[in-house]
Image (cartoon, rainbow, N blue to C red):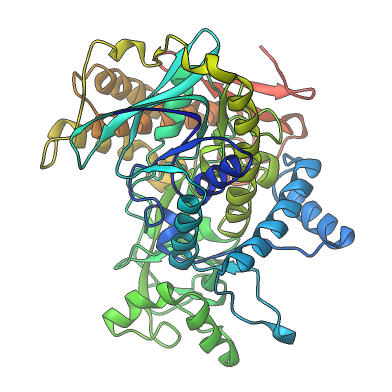
Length: 522
């Protein structure tokens, strides 16, 4: 199947949906390709999330920006952050106009500081369709299409039809989400870093990849990593004694160190009585696993673990040059978790609220810019001689994955997971450990990139191994501790490192400091 459009959006989560709707509203013809089913796949659709919504009061917004600037180690951009807060405010009111069922808050006004994922994304799919966007569900992109002018579309497979697709477009927005390394966090197993790999093959860079070691608390019997309610928790050893210093917000490393030695238990025994009904209402998905197990989390102990979520809750992603969400490759834009969130979140996790705000606002920014670029090319965008950006694969046909588990794919995935998931390697970092893991990951990359099969599964393994290498190369270069990046051999924050780090490459990866208004230091 071959389509032509002004804009192609890859990814159908919040960022992709907002990008598609915005581009179509600007007059562009738009196609959207989703690895899953647009509106139901991905982390956002699986559960609810808070969102950083601020009223249009300069002082309130300045305080919110300054607070995040401090928490994020001084790496966020106040000017861009203000634009995100402004756009998020407008988007939330747009959702209400479209019919999103907001609960009523004080004074009978809609409560605009949280979103229920299923309702949110069901509405966004309807709006995408109403905008006239051509949706390709269950259609993962396997490579971008490029020429000497930049990016001109993408190609992939249709999993249900069992054939290929190709969209030739003037501009492409990558909104494929982050990379959780198949850790089984709720809704995240479609998030394997595919967009990073696509962008890198076309010449895009990464940024903030050292801030990609997010771990979130969840019960051992659950995949739900909603972390906000653990602020009301006390953490215990197996003998029932509280773990001193353990805290969901700032004492997570203590929990991790304890888990290396023994099981850890939890109870939400600090939740005020009057809040309990509200907590159940606001995040019902959080309580569902407890109800299935017959556990009252407010009164009974339950075992917990820390589940790895990589860049989904981290801040790393494709480097963007400005608030238009442009990458350095002409015609290529990035939004949501596929893009770096450093400019908004700095070195600290965006969690749910900041990442949700970034997804919708960056989707609007990227969609508007992509529409302008794609339509500006006129008819010549469909006269380009395009080739696959993955030149090493051009002689190998795309294929739909064979039914059943591909053992080679599983071996590659396991090899990556063994280097990124353990706390002792990725949460408690040191130069020696990072170098050893990088050596193993380089070997894994060579093995998986040499595979003959050019399918979604093998591309996932490639993307995960590439993502892990950018993470650790950046972490090696940042010889300090800042935000979520903690080095045991450099435990202090160093003022000389108050700058971003960009990375890239595939067979030969690199990482460099980004200083002086965007200049890369060699």
